[in-house]
Amino acid sequence: MASVSLRNIKKIYPPVAGEKKKHLSPSDEPGANLEKTDRGIVAVQNFNIEIKDKEFVVLVGPSGCGKSTTLRMIAGLEEITEGELYIDGKLVNELDPKDRDIAMVFQNYALYPHMTVYDNMAFALRKRTSSKEEIDRKVREAADILGITEYLDRKPKSLSGGQRQRVAIGRAIVRNPKSMLMDEPLSNLDAKLRNQMRAELIRLRKKINTTFIYVTHDQTEAMTLGDRIVVMKDGFIQQIGTPQEVFDKPSNQFVAGFIGTPQMNFFHAVLIEENGHFCVDFDGFKVPVVDEDNRRMKANGVKSAPIILGLRPDSLSLVESDQYPIAHVGVVEMMGTNVHLHLEFKGKDIILVTQAKDENQHLKLDYESDSMIHFSFLPQSMYLFDIETGKNLAI
Image 1 (cartoon, rainbow, N blue to C red):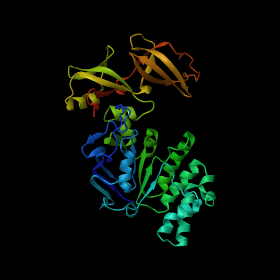
Image 2 (tube, one colour; image 1 turned 90 degrees about the vertical axis):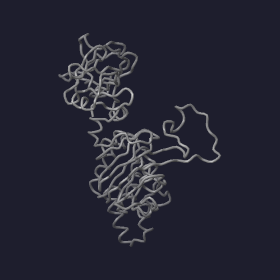
Image 3 (cartoon, rainbow, N blue to C red; image 1 turned 135 degrees about the horizontal axis):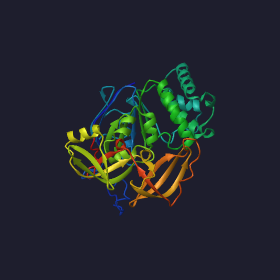
Image 4 (cartoon, helix red, strand yellow; image 1 turned 30 degrees about the vertical axis):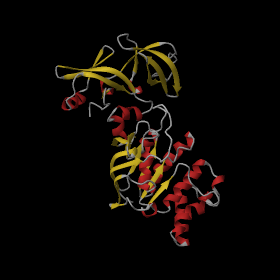
């Protein structure tokens, strides 16, 4: 159990001596958007966070954003180029991984194939020269928490992916570490097992008193597991907040598009100030900005200008009036209780989510490909972003 503090952390990977430069297009080059300096590629920049004791923090972002590199620096598997890392108030930049009192669960489980489940879980305790009685007690307690007691005599090859992941977690928790680091631990599981293991991790968190730092590219995992989420892009923190804060008040267009399923729709629009109040001109329709956002935007010095308008798919609604914007239905996806309509609007692909059944629970059959529909939205559903910086104008 420990707090973890990262202060102005930076990671630079120096160029490899003698390495030939590959001729790749900018979009194909790994880390194409990362800053390149004379010292090398900057994988993590100005990373600052104070993680409280027993908190569950999730680092989330697309591949190559620096989240796993950050986790490995906390673990001591990567050197910190600049900045300070504290665990439980102690500066640990120069400490070996074994002296940081952390445990790490990897994506590929990293189990010893020739050992039984029991021996895999007991391995670290034996290295510490713990007594046989203590080892047996801790292994069986962890196995009971994870529901793998019946597998203690088996070897990893006879277990399913979900069972192996439980063993990997068990091997970590028997040590009672100050911090538990998890690097995409569910990414090798199928969809059903991922859902089951997410629930297992939530239950596990309630049973053991430790600090969790969890890395994933899956925003559903981030939203369901984390007390707080750290959204990363190109080595920088984009936003830190609770799942609901990040969803309701994304700091910029990237966060708004990354958090939420299906992804937020974005449109070009114009912000207009009239008589001290803002409205959005969208395709010739003027929609007033709600009072709370209007006050914040005036306090932020926002002026009339072209903007990016963000609308979540479930905030769009079908209307029959031709006074509203019209779109072409491309694909209709039946998703059980909902229908996802993939629409073409002014050359852009957007998604509208609506109910599959009417108020009498009869299946609606009037969603057809190649048809035309009108859509609308409420003022409180609008997200307004600066067209140049992507910053949310109302926070």
